[in-house]
Each structure stands twice: as C-alpha cells, then as structure tokens.
Image (cartoon, rainbow, N blue to C red; front, side):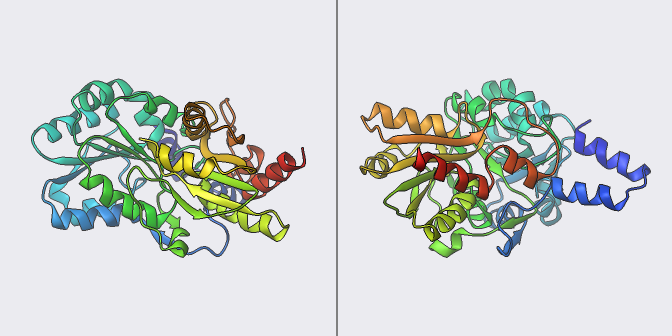
Length: 345
C-alpha cells in the first residue's frame, strides 16, 4: 500500500491536531509564488475536452484517480474509465493492449511508481512496439514532502534512455492544458510529469503556446540565461525579476520537452557570448535536463560558463515543502542566492 494510502487510513483513525494539519498542508504546499492565480485539475479538464471530440480516448489509473486529476475524466466518461487498483505493471500492460486495439489510453499514477515499479513493462509492452500510450504521472521530483518513497527525483534519468519515448515536463496549469492536447495528437508513447490539484498559472503572461519538442525564450538577458523545465520555470521567472531589481539582467529559456531536446534553440541562445548559462530542474542533477543540455552544447561546440541547479544525488528528507525546497536549493530565494554567488566568484 502506498504511503499516501497508508497515511489516509492512519489519519482516519487517529485524532489530528492543529500542528499535524499544518504540517500536512505544508507537505503539499503550492508551488507558485504567493498571489499567482491557480487552475483546478488542468489535466483532467483538458482530457475531458479531448474525449468529447475523440471516442478512442480512455483513462486508466492505479488507485490514484483523485490524486492525478483523472477523477474529472471518470465523472464525465465512466464507461471509458478503468480503475486498475494498486497494480501499476498490470495497468501499463493493459494500456498497451488497448493501444493495440486502436484506442488511445491515458494511464495515470505517481511518477515514482511508473519509473521504479513498472519500467520493464513500459519498456517491453509500450516503448518497444512504439504504442500510442500516454503516461501522465503526478508528484514529479520534490513536489511532496512524504519522503523518498514518493519523491520521483530520478524519473527523467530512468526514462531518457528509453527509445521511442517522448518526455514532457510542463511548467504550469496553462502548459499542462496545452500539452495534454498536444500529446493526444502525437502518435507514440509519451511520459508527462504532472502538477495536480490547484496548479499555478504564470505562462499566460507571455502569450504562451506549447509546442511539442520546442524550447521557447520567455525573456532575454545579457548576464544570465536560465534554461529550465517544469515548475522550476516558475522559480526562474521569479528569480529573474528579483535579480533585475539588483541590476542583474537575466533571461529564461523554457524547455518543457526533455526528449527530444530542442538542440537548435538551445545552441542558438546559449552560444551568445559573455553570459552565464544556468539550468534549473526539479530533478536530480544526475541524468536530467542539466546534463542533457550540457551534452548537447558540448557536442555542438558551444562552451559557455555553465552551472546546474537541481536536486542532489541522494535520497531526500521528508518535511514541509517550502523548507525542503530551500534546503535543496530549488526555492526562488535559493536560486537568487546561488546565481549571485556564481557571478561574484
């Protein structure tokens, strides 16, 4: 039984005091800056929109419909929803079978369960046959305070080496909505990281439109270029604005498609002389966006001053998310401090 499932059963039979409620709330705290607007369940609502237009779309979950926003789809299309129980390997194998019959399954669970428990089934049943299965997985990286059993800090590293698989790490509610439509239209297997529940929205400030396989320059800057994915793009935008107040001119290149990487756009913007390139990701510094970007630049003869912001190569602590994000260097304040340190040295 998963930790969240065990925890909910424990809470049901144990009195919860105010301190426990406060800690629990902090462990699933919002990822956006205070005051950012939020959207409820953008993935679930986008999938419902798609399913109204396409009767081949079906949804599967491994006992986590409510926690991956697939309950929205289940309420709208109960006859096209499959509750597979706590059996991720079975769920992905079933999704492969449905895809072989011409359907387009969206299968949801937590990212740790897809990457660690079901990798072989995904590789052999889905990726090898290049099947049209969309794996949409919540709690990527450090988006829960419940500890290593639920923190998918190495999922990108695990999946990047898998042939035929497209990998997407969206930033906010707007991009999740747009990316869901895009991956539904794409033929072939996709792994998409998911922010769920009340998801902040920030990219609408840029008249943003997601394009599968494309990185996009949101802001330019002469001294620092952030190359970021996932909710770390929210953080780099916030850090950029704070650094500009101190006279440090930064830009943000958002890179939501981890595989295939948009090498041409990366080379174009990272080749500009005289500025520090900083990758920022909600993932281990081993095997994620940072190492992908470094490899792409080096192979194309581009060698800027280069630094990486990401999670350390270790199993992380449990606790309140704001504290953990600062502890592991991915809070906005931590990003600002680190960039100032690098520029000063």
